[in-house]
Amino acid sequence: MTGGRAGGGSGRRVRVEALAPVMVLGPREARHLQVLRLAPGATVLVFDGQGAQAQATLAELDAGRAVLHLGEASEAAAETPQPLTLGVALLKGDKLADVVRAATELGVARVQLLVTRRADAREIGAQKLLRLNRVAEEASKQSRRAVTPDVLAPVSLSEWHWEGQLFVAQPGAEARLTDRLDWSGPVALLTGPEGGLTDDEVLSLRQRGAVAVTLGPRILRAETAPVALLGAVAALGV
Image 1 (tube, rainbow, N blue to C red):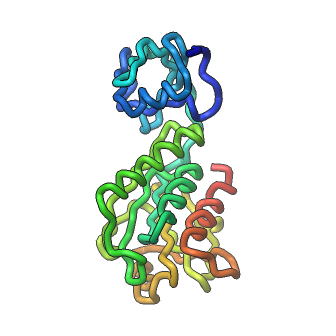
Image 2: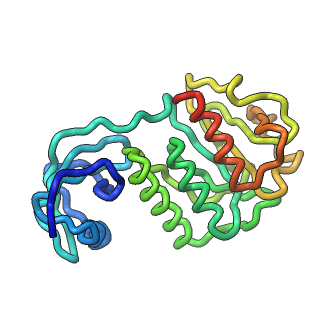
């Protein structure tokens, strides 16, 4: 095996619970480092998922664990001015994983899964939720973010309490996200399931302070709409 300096790719980015002088990783991350053919003396980039990251030196590595020694702090990729939450209706198959991956790359701080009237499912199992959080972790490595979004267990739309502004993607709406977005506080975005949110659901959200916004003249699939909405935020350069 060969060591070396940490490169710019995602392979040598390692998620840790917290930055500390000595960090001990379990079998999962140890196997990952072995697959990369790293040896003691190699440099990796560690991040805690909360915004901090630093260089670290691999001191020990075997199948059961890896030991890292903390080095110099490293500047992390810029985050949005305020926390950005994506609320997304439960979708079937691997669509949620695709949404979580893209949302992580586009800068969300958390993903709130929602049960809506037309949602494809009413609940998800603990293993699927764990998998979605691992998708977010891998996407944060790939996109060089020091923040790993939390994917939160589903709640009903009526039970969801967001912080700050909420923008709801709704066909036929006239408001544009780029004209209404205000970073003086947290921002939340919401997209519905296939078939969309019902008129009653949108009305209830608007009565609670949400703003319905357009995604353009075309009807988008449920897994495309979150990317389009987040892309509008990313286009503002934040």
